[in-house]
Each structure stands twice: as C-alpha cells, then as structure tokens.
Image (cartoon, rainbow, N blue to C red; front, side):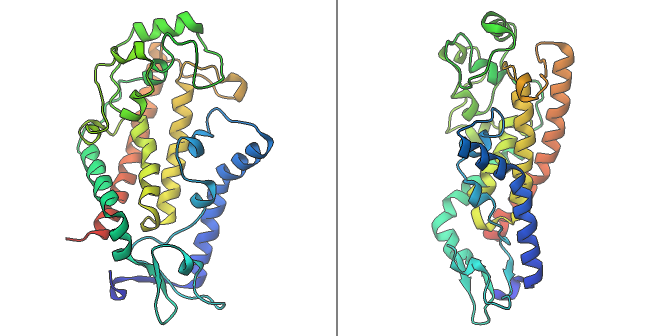
Length: 293
C-alpha cells in the first residue's frame, strides 16, 4: 500500500468519527463495565465480552481502515502513530502499514476471506429454530446459564426429542451435551467449518463481529461497530428463543416449540441474514483491499 492510493482524512473528520464510534460502543461497554465493577452478570449482553475475546477498550478504539490515512492535528500526529501496524510519514500523516500487517496476519486474512466467501455462496437456511441452545442443556443437570428452564427439565428434553436438529456451526455444536450430539443431523468440525457454515445461522452472523476484530486495524471502526450491533441484536433473539426463562431480565420468550414461535424466529433470522450479507460483503472488501490481485 503506497501513500498515493490513500484517502487522507482531515483531523476534524477523524476526531469526529472517533468520538462517534466511542459513543456508539459505550451503549454496551459502559453497562458491562458497571456490572463487572459490582460483580453482576447479564444473561444476554455479557456474551459479547466473554465468549468474544475483544475487550471493551479495544472495541472502543476507532480505526480508519485500510486505504485511509490520518492527517496530523494541531498538537501532532494521530494517536494511532503509537499503535501496532501503523506508520507515520515525514508529513505526520498516519496510516496502516499494510505490508507489516500482512507479514504478521496474512494467514488470518486468508482464512477469514475464504470462510466469508464460502458462507456467502450458500443459500439462507432458516429452519433450525435455535435448537442448538436446547441441545446444550438436553438431559443435563448443569447448565451454562444460572437461569430457570422455561418448560422445566422434562419439557425441555421433550422439545429436543420432538424436533430434528440441523446445526451447522461448530462453535455451537461443540457445546451440545453428549446425549444431544447424535441427534444433530450434521456433525460439524473445525476443519469443515468453511464447507459447512451458512448465512442464515445466527452464530455465523454473530461471528461477523469476531472476524471484524480479528482483521483488526484494517477494518474501519464503523464496520466493526455495525458488526457488533448486529451481534448484540442476534444475541437477544438467540437467548429469547432458548429454553431459558428470561422474563425477570425483561425479555419475552420466542416460543419456538409452537408454530407461531417458529414463524417469528424464522422471520427474524432472515432479517438478520440480510443485514449480515451486507456486512460480509464489506469485510470481504477489506480482505481484498489488503491483498489486491
């Protein structure tokens, strides 16, 4: 990447975008930090900072993304000058050092691009009805969440036994109870992940956030925040459709054991898939900008 192809953002613009990004992420980051300081947990939103490994501080960090650069402010170069994989020109303009970044992260970029492209090539399947969460508690005395089961132990197991499970996402499947593993029509593996993920899967859609932060400073802050916001929305549906009773936390159940609940779930799933398709396209564009033909 050479300076000639960079779009240089004036200081006023990148400062405004930084502030807007921090304010947007603080909608989730500030309550999470406050809960953590009090030793409290949240059954839905903590997932965004515990299952996913990026810290609130790093999510708040705005990046211009590959192909953009930051003009110096009155008090000197942008703070990015001190961050990993950035370089500062003689004129004080700061930009991602794509060559250095690829030297360290090229394998990751290649994997993410291959996975996103493969997922995008498949049709949306909206018939899984969130049964992965039910399979995670099937015939188990212990649960991942300290919440009551909406239908009780026997009722929860009956829902699993009365449905065909078709989970294609390895990182959901790996949490199935031993008794539920054989009930899944598919048997995902880590190695088969690029060959099995499909764009309707809630977990594949949430994982767009993971791939955005895995691509790190090459991803513009606005794209990272869009992926985070989508993951937060999907997580709510994921838990509302789960076997857990979240009424005390303020969440109405999506009763996927009923025809009405199935229809509600599938409609929301298709909407999320449409949002995810656009974000997947934007992430692929980042990968392509890093490794132009």
